[in-house]
Length: 425
Image (cartoon, rainbow, N blue to C red; front, top):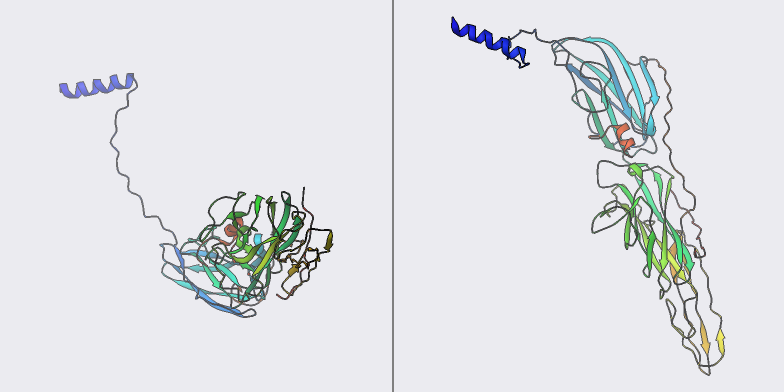
């Protein structure tokens, strides 16, 4: 009987000085929690042509232990897709980054082990190319969140179409030692828009700085280019750059201008660099079938840097030692791809005939204006008639999240005026 007394006394003493005494936990039996667990089947892959309607169905199965009473079924489409018609019970809206949404309430009960089938329908628009479709519900039948699981899925697809990315260059003039501003342009002639998060075909413009000049100011969305991709943050002083649009997205008819400030070397002669429509990794995108307008030039016509009797860029002058000289010529013209040729030369004679020197450079000038596709978040709601669910209607980022990091999923002959500007002193 003494041991229990000592144990009791110890407990009292411990409590008096604030030391806790361990208490053995007593197991408590809990009843099994019952809940629905919905799983949705996957949509088959497709490559629709613009104008085609995709018409398939998915099956929602309850693998849980309780009925799912009512389902909220959601479908989201990227900008090259749309719903062919509206169905009663569904609310339609347009979200950020041109994402179209159908939110449908299914007045049904799905018992454990049972399934229901619902259609997913959408059509490919003329600008369809790199698209994504999100579809499904929440695990217990509520509206889905922004991630993906077995109850809410994503299908990526590439429409049977193309996008024609074109490079446009510039032509400027300046004296040795001065600074000039050149603009390289990436333009999408369509017919498809480009918004690529899922492959290496992310649209970009490769820029090679003209020899004899140094890039002193560089756009923030242009990075130095190494062997097969960007090598670091934007900074001046490199020979090659790769520039790409925010979100790897460029809409049909959109132009993106990238402006560089170049310093002309003290001994530089007329020179040109190159701009090429490409991908971020320097490869030709598979969706681009027209290579004729992939390349253009950044030309710098160096003026006032040659002494009489010395050679000029593209030619030489041979002259005598007396006072007679001929005027040089300069001219230029545009070809259908925006290329311009120009020349300058000087002749000198003194009892012997001087050879005419010609300076030539070729450039492509891009449009000075930029058309930007802005994201709008407008919402329309309503319910149509007919059908059994959403007339609604690929693996990775949610459509809205892709727009936030900047979204998922893309003609003609243009005569481009050549720009000629004086050097910025």
